[in-house]
Image (cartoon, rainbow, N blue to C red):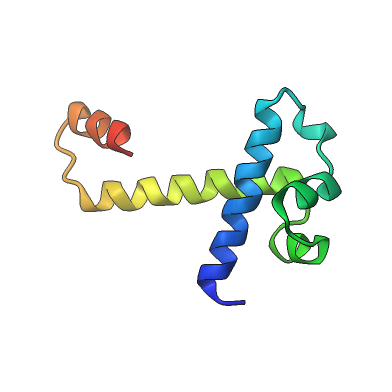
Length: 90
């Protein structure tokens, strides 16, 4: 699977999972089948990316943290205000 398609599938899964949570559904009650139907992603594809719906959240948080770390590497941080500015720009 090309990297771009892999990332698009990830984005679909994350968006739909957050949409389901936003409607008031508890993460523990969201099934892989439900997420796949809502995302238009097959179960087989889902399991190529993640082992559970919990792992979708973990992957999102890991990616976000890594993105923020990359921003910090590129941004000169001389004081706390610089860090706060970088955080809010993120």
